[in-house]
Image (cartoon, rainbow, N blue to C red; front, side, top):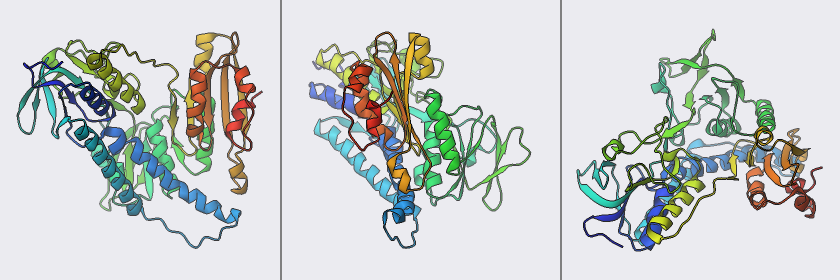
Length: 452
């Protein structure tokens, strides 16, 4: 397999979820593999994304649990919250995962270069710190995506999801720009921990791409929990006063919003700037993404790309599958093809929502005649908690075949429930199959087989 004219059979730029998976699978097939990572091995999801964020979500849930405890017979003395304790615990776990990912590469004899690598030709890269030139028969770009920071006056006073995990203290007042999943997840975290949260969005839509009924339900619940929203209000400028307070000025608004922290969460862009892709004739799309075919191959035959840098589906499990499929095809001689249909996703808002398959509007456009079943219920746990919040489950069915096309859910533990239910949707089961399944009582999940 190895070609002596090259230093490596595979050189991977980016040691995130997709890059690490591709590296170890290729090495397992006997390839000589090296990977370059300019920050920390593990990538966005592990180091500054999904994993540490979910730990913050767990930490914030205790506020609600402690508040409800008395209704379940518990006497809880005066409670206090210490942000540095939670922050440092999360960062320690990030260190653990960084070590685990590093160990995985070591175990598979993958060489690691902890510096930036840029492409200098179809089969060569240059390491920025050492200046070393390395050749490889195949190059894989897996550099992920990077938070977008729009240009406006005072943007230097704002943070993104990269910096939020390292705050010195919990801000008393937070303004979050954007209404996508990252914005609403951190809005929920800060709100639960006691911060006053204002979500500012330049349009009137939140969570674009999710089912409208679930979006409306989340808006109602989070507003009742104290999160404030400003729609159709683009940022004009952010001014930092001498006392450190930030004034957030919105276009068309006479007065600023005062904040201790401003977080911009208006999207992520493919991380391709400065990679030297032009040196190998790699074609980029209109968003700066690397254009690839179904085999993850770019316009340069020796260069491939997987994960968020291709802007196909920006989800960690998808990047992992793409990395695996790439290595299986190029180094394992397999003909693995990824099916991008029925990919489940979740928003770890409070409460969380999750979905698989098309929204109701999309399904009508795709299939014409559909049936929509729903269950609007109050989770049992909320009864003793004296919370009026209600869960909502929707099932979308093809009227012609009875096949379940999609499931959309909002309520406690929705992502955990949906993962199992997504298997049934992916398998093409029918509404009759769901109806024939005996309910597991008492549970929220039983609503999936009781919808009429």
